[in-house]
Structure formats: C-alpha cells, structure tokens
Image (cartoon, rainbow, N blue to C red; front, top):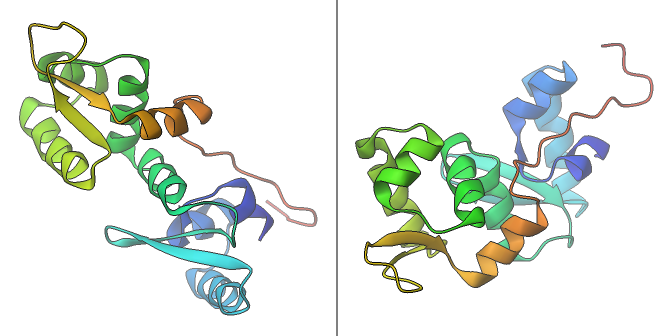
Length: 155
C-alpha cells in the first residue's frame, strides 16, 4: 500500500520487480486492497494501473499513467516546456518521425495533446491542453517514479 501511494499509477509487474515479490503475491494483495476500497484500478492501454482510493480525479490518473510510460512521458515533459513542431519533438524525445506519429495520434485522440498554429507560429506545432499542462507542470515535467524501501524489507 505504501509503495502504491508513493508511486501512483504503478502496474503489477513494476510492483513485483521493485519490491522483489512474486507476481502472484502482488496480485493477491493488490486485488484484496482494491476489493476493500483502499486502491483504485485504472486501465491504461494493456496495463492496469493502481492509485490510492479517492486521491486523484480521472484526468489526474490519465496524466499520471501517461507520465509513467516511456515515450508518452517524455513527450509530455518536453511539451510542458513549450510547443514543438513534429521534427523538433522527435529530436527532443529521441524517436523516429514514424514512431512519434504513432504516439501523437494516440495522444491527440485522447485529447491530451493538441496541434495547430499557436501563438503566431508559422509552423504547425504540438502543445498540451491547458488543463493537462497544469497537471504535467505540477509533477515537475518528470515521470513520477520513486522507489520506496518499506520497513522490514530485506532487499
């Protein structure tokens, strides 16, 4: 429970690997905590991510989940600084143009990222929706990952 509260949006395998516990043991305890109403489960693509119950609104859970994903987290962090063109963003996050296109289509469909001319720019740019921008900046534009050493753990 303490690990999930410290690492909102974590998924089962992360918990298992970071705490050195078997996946079966993690599943059992996470499901029990979810059933008891202490945790909330949120689907993020193929992952089930976990959060402390009643701690985050749906939009916050979405942003936290995206920030924990590699490419999407890097994209949101870069766009939290300033709008970027496709070429600039691909270079900044270290993705090929094709890979960035795939991720951006997904983020555009989710309504997290917007594109178009903005603030007098001559080129089309990607930028974050204002509410998403505030959430990403509140996280400091970083992926929220902090491992926790629990009392009594032996690793």
